[in-house]
Image (tube, rainbow, N blue to C red; front, side, top):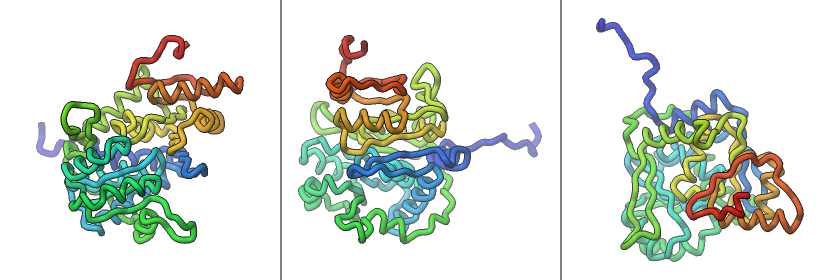
Length: 308
């Protein structure tokens, strides 16, 4: 092989490349979020720019490659932006499960040595309890503002930056996500996911015999983004340019049915408990979900009667 030969298209498997691909090829693809009862719409292009502004904000705060940045948040576009903005600079996104005991949450934040934590206003009470016990966290930033005329900590951080940065390139085997186990013996254990494994996982789950995600899909993850990265769905939709519907904190039958109907959701994923509520709402109100073609259930066994 001559010394002049070059490798064709050798692009590292970084999450920023996944998001840039969506912003370029599916720039009008929608990310729909429900925040405090309001439906908010963004495109992949919007969220890629916002993720770049977040990345600049994190760097300005002194967040370095390999630092852990925690989230206490629901499924919405801000959590989605953090999914890419944090790992995009080589830091590690640590999704904290708010359903754990307060003592466990304190333990995992300290064990991870998180340097910053972004949280939804819903979790203010929880944050007030853990904050005095987590000395490594230098920045506590709220995603919501109490007063509409004042931007939240998160929006204020984004507003300070233009998003005029180029995503850095680094080793695709760098860690991107940190998730802790729950329900195991002893203290929760931290599990790390790399950029490479996350991007390959996105390809795998999108295949026809797996979740069969394409640009024509409308995917609604009901599984929280703090549960094993919402079973990879935010990455599969970004890879394929599918429409992503993020239901926020209201996961009752009526809210989910309305969202499926309103947004034309074609597939959804979550634990059986959630679907019992949707099913019972549909039975009581004699309504159907004509657009919904596929449900992926996990976490606990699904009764046959429910599948039927």
